[in-house]
Length: 303
Ligand SMILES: NC(=O)c1ccc[n+]([C@@H]2O[C@H](COP(=O)([O-])OP(=O)(O)OC[C@H]3O[C@@H](n4cnc5c(N)ncnc54)[C@H](OP(=O)(O)O)[C@@H]3O)[C@@H](O)[C@H]2O)c1
Image (tube, rainbow, N blue to C red; front, top):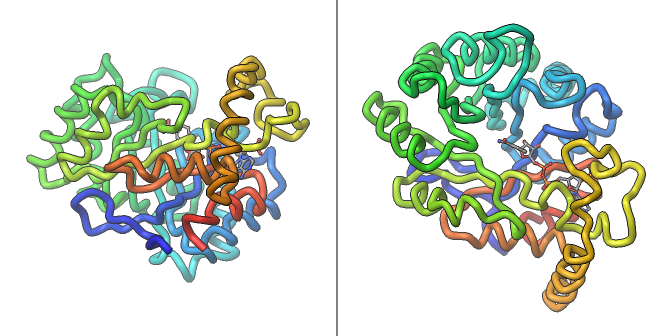
């Protein structure tokens, strides 16, 4: 049985091989008791890393509010057993200061996230995307100062291209706030971090890599084999459009299903293990709309 935790790059942090993301299914649009059951199931099975961003949930911010309630009602005694991340970088509030990568935005956004989650600090704070119009030093110095202020223990970067990532790695290292982790989309249908050299760079530099949407938002599961379920992400036609369910995808899924069955796995397990097998990957960051899904996902990886 593989170990549950992986070392995050060359750091002291161990992350579970499967981490839980709160982008969908944890906001005001989801039943609180279901969110609670999924979160508790995760923690009870060693999933110690929960990932947020300021804008997760419908309405934006409501996933962090759910976490605040869970902290008060369930998780406060276990704060030191949790590794909680959040991010800022995409549009969060009106006007010129609620988007992209300014110092003004990152610092005030983190303050808001802490208030919503009822936390004094997060374990990890990310720049959610690269901002080509803000001097890179401004964004990075804000990350350094956030760590110095004690509001985050580590910093991460998500969705940055390779060249700015290299510059960030050097800038942060020179200020003794080494980049802990890179968060990028990696799954069997989208291999950009490999093709663009990002995963190799992280591995060489001792930076962890956490793969988001490792199931391609549910495409790499049995969810859409027989149609589009009414309660699925695709049925909402927003982040996952129904035109992704092509004959080619279904053909690919049937082949994957045959391969998975040969190893006694589900399609989702096959897809997650593929990501975890890529050298340099620390953790897969999954979403789930039920305990059953999460249970299925961790089986063969954490059990
Ligand atoms: N940094 C970034 O820019 C960024 C971007 C995207 C995501 N993320 C992070 O990554 C996390 C995960 O993203 P994601 O939700 O797209 O990940 P994902 O794991 O690829 O997709 C999760 C969805 O797949 C379906 N699913 C999961 N397990 C299943 C199973 N065993 N059987 C059938 N269907 C299953 C569910 O869809 P239904 O809801 O339809 O049931 C679930 O909501 C986010 O919560 C967030 O923390 C970060």
